Amino acid sequence: MTNAGQPVKTVLETKDVTLTYQDGRNIVYALRKVNLAVAPGEFVGILGPSGSGKTSLLYTLSGIRPPTVGHVYLYGRAIDMPGVSREALRRQNFGFVFQQYFLINYLNVLQNIIVGAKRDDAETRERGRSLVERLGLAGLERRKPYELSGGQRQRVAIARAIINEPLVLLADEPTANLDHTTGATVMDLLTETRGESALVAVSHDQTVLQRADSLYKMWDGELERVR
Image (spheres, rainbow, N blue to C red):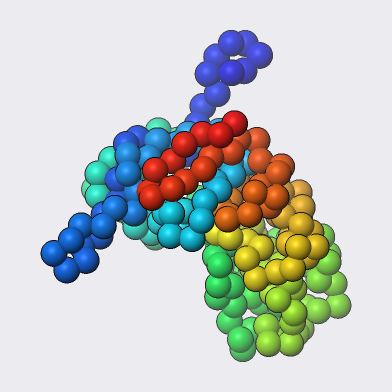
């Protein structure tokens, strides 16, 4: 609630979202009637083991995979409505930190950061250089991904995800390939450099989500609020 007693408007919301797959003759449920509301600027943490549906939820939230049943709403508008380009919507409104970094090996650090930007202009390049500084990558701008450590590659992926200052930043196991100390540093950087973006991060490790404003657990496609 706001100070005036009015409900906080959600930036992202799901209503009874179910996602199924066909496996031969069997129907597999990746998500089961998931309801989630994310406020602007909120950090939502989702905890669950591998295979619980966390990645499927992120893909559905961003429109990569449309739900089988139910809808996902971005500021009250269903993102799976006819005439809506999900690809354009993702590019304009979402940043995604995947488990796999998906960096381009023939591009250097700075080029990898700005490759997904809406525009390639002086302002974008300056923001890219600023993110390089803030994420501790100064001096590595001209290095290629294969010349970086795992933690450094993860930081490049984070910078690429937030270069457009997205409405919603989605992070899928952002510390999965890192040691504990480096993972904690990456989460600190992710929360501190995301600006006003809402953050939805999923992890099997509860310590990664300690700074979340709200915490959920996921099991067999079902989502339950913890706090």
